[in-house]
Structures are given as structure tokens and as C-alpha cells.
Image (cartoon, rainbow, N blue to C red; front, side, top):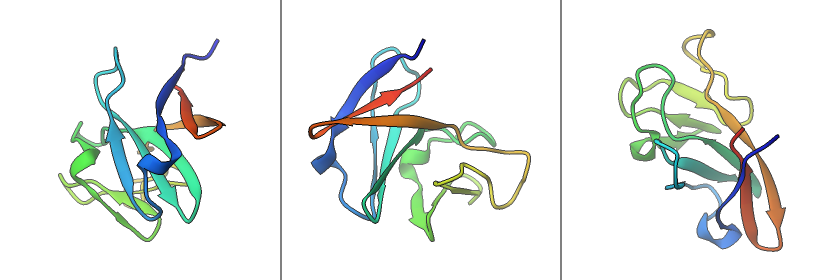
Length: 104
């Protein structure tokens, strides 16, 4: 069974940007990215060394970790520097203008 939570509204994330949103009961924020109209939800922590990705930046469809500059392809979650690392991605359901994310 999925744990679906409302994270934000579509208009809260501009195209080409990402934002981190706190979710009650979750340690790290959920990051919502808008890549040319495609909404993507990921964990807000780098799987390399638990660095907050909210302070990172976007580069060529990837979120770059501010800790060690590891790049994670947002569409696949794969790390461009270390094939053993993968950024957790969450399924999004859009209901009207609300973004709901399945955390489990």
C-alpha cells in the first residue's frame, strides 16, 4: 500500500527549477522539479553521503549535490559519477493543481 501525501501545488515550482518541501513525519524534504513541464519528485538527500540536495542546483537535467558535486539524472535517478548510486524517485499523482507523492 502506498503512502500518498500532498506536497505542493503545480504553480509552486517554476519550469526549470526545483523546490524542497517538508513533509510531516519524513526526515528529509521531498524535492519537486519541473523539467520542461515534466514534474519529478525525489528524495531530498544525496545517497552518497546524506547531504541536503535543497542547496544543490540543476544542470543538464540533473540535480547536483552541493557536497561533492555528484550529479543525479532526474528522469532516471542514476548517478553520473558512480553507477552504484541512485537517487530515490517518487511517483507523482496530479489532482487538479495539487501534487501528491507516493512515498512508499
